[in-house]
Amino acid sequence: MSSGVKLLLPALAVLLVGCASVPNPDPRDPFEGFNRGVYKFNEGFDKAIAKPVATAYKDVLPGAVRNGVRNFFSNIADVFIGVNNMLQGKPREAFSDWGRFAFNTTFGFLGLADWATPMGLEKHDEDFGQTLGRWGVGSGPYIVLPFLGPSDGRDTVGTAFDMYTDPVSNHTPVDERNSAITLRLVSRRADLLGASRLLEQAALDPYAFLRDAYLQRRRNLIYDGRPPREREADLPPEEGSNGPQH
Amino acid sequence: MGLSIERAVAGLALVALTALAGRAGAATTAPDVLVKNVTLEVIGIVKHDKAMRNGDRKKIIDLIESKVLPHFDMRSMTATAVGLGWRRATPAQRAELTEQFKTLLIRTYASALTDYSEQKFEFLPLHMSPGDTDVTVRVRVVQADAQPVPIDYSMERTADGWKVYDVSVGLVSLVATYRTEFGNLVRAQGIDGLIRALKAKNETLEQSGGRDGK
Image (cartoon, rainbow over all chains, first blue to last red; front, side):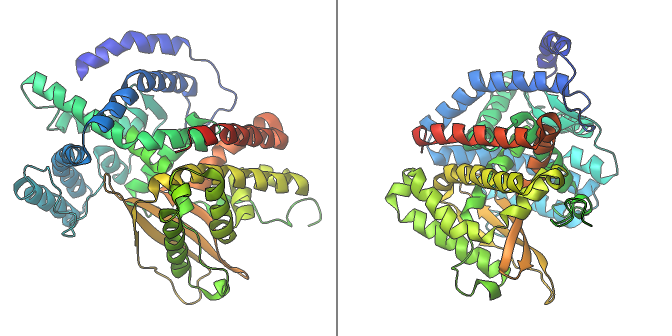
């Protein structure tokens, strides 16, 4: 990954130059000009390379094979999902994740099949960014990462940890590792083919839509779907409060 | 990470699948029962209608309008999405905003309805005390090829039965997500600017919708 990052630096420098002031600054997104540049770059990369490859992957390979690929990588990820649950003080979930890994690795043929889910061991969504959030680290500014997409200060650090500990990224020999990383990315992108079209449809400004969705989702994930509520407070009063009559 | 968020956004479209139940007796139907009935009814209809499965948008839009929409409090959703600007809007502007926002949501959902009609739904138990007037009904869409997508319906009890006032898909609230976008537009171009942008968006969807149909 790090050699890829080095290659990116010139591209980023160009993007930074293109960084202009934006019409509606959002306090959560102080680098919006820069972020929009990276967003555009990511879109271009996706359109030219990632999406066509993912489409071909989906068209060529039967669903059973794609399921196997997805399950295989998902199974490997369960190890550190468990670690993160432990770090967040949720040992029950952690043991469930490790139980999933043990079960699927053996009976699920090295993780190609996910038998643990139908058995009631639920798949969790945890990562180091969420662990940091759980520990009270603030989100920091919103950041769009090249290739990886939406993130924030905290999640960028978290993602670096995720990569550092990722068994796939640490696999040797390197050519096998690179093939595995590519396959994992293609598999993930293929699962989202319907999604990107919908984003285009739903949003007036896809950049802002994606940003807000990301920030909300991360907040919710940190609290495992039940964050302290904050929305009623800033709800506009119901009609009737309009105008000077009251 | 970036990828899972896109999935969440895509899931917003699944909302269409929740309709709420038949009209009669709606006022007394429990919110979770309502969600379940309508979801299953709409899915059932799409499944058995070849034209809809092949992307007959007009038919799908009609279905959403007749079965799903009556159970949404569109005015409240629009008011919250528009935020502060709503207070300054005239009644005519409010009506127009509500109409355009509704159209945008219907169009978006219609595109997804066929894609998602094959999925299975899990209806999670509702935690509700007898006097509650504001509840969250939790549904999960179980997809053959991906992790389940949670859909949470925020519902409020009204004189006219339980109404949905926000939907979260994949932990992303629909109303809150539109809020910043709408707020920016209102600040830059005023309420009429937002109305114009919504109209333009709807027209684009109308034109492209028929063609890339599926």
